[in-house]
Length: 66
Image (cartoon, rainbow, N blue to C red; front, side):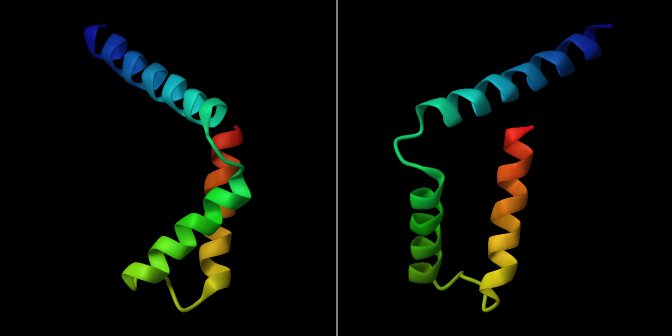
């Protein structure tokens, strides 16, 4: 029972943190995505296939909406 309580606390904390991040984000999602892409390009970490990264970003955004 104690393990279940800890698990639920972790999940609850993650949900509250994600919600707070979405509500308090200083910029729109489009601006944030562009900033992330710029940072990755600057560091040489941006994948050659831009479409693949866009798909990944969209998948992450969909998961956050749920």
